[in-house]
Length: 229
Image (tube, helix red, strand yellow):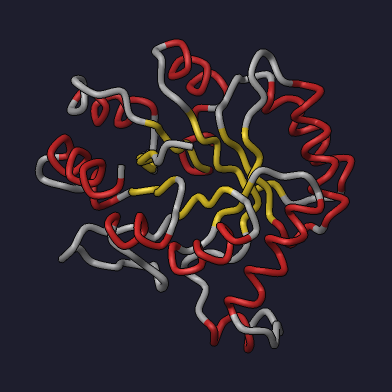
């Protein structure tokens, strides 16, 4: 599988999204549409972007009872997205039902289904003191990834630092928390450069503010591609 850079389009509305994409008009990047934008613009934006030829990672992190997730995934599959996700914390049965929904609702190619292990904003202290998980971050990510594999998923979302664990399991790793050298970490705790993510074995990197807030987004995007792909 080829490595790819995914741009996190964490914009407030459709207008600002297309203003940004105009700055990349010479490229056709892979785009992540998350909660902020999707809950404002809905499925119509996804369909419009797909019609324009963009690949889409729909990042809604479903986490509910298995039957609800199954029905939601059937609807998501009809949008023709390329990647979508659930929270691994929902358990194996929930993930299996998510996969079933995608398979039944897919039009054409089936989307890749991945599971969020632990957010890149989660620290070891939060894991232990707030989530009451005594295992280390690395152990927790591995166990959640093993559950995703048992459920038939394609891969997981994890920090680039855990990508070697995921590669050893034969799963795809989609890794946020990417910053170009010298950029601020902001609210991320477990971060990496594109070059390090490549070295660690990530399949996809998700890059947000290092591109979207850059003075020259096209240059920043091409730099990420040059380092990672």
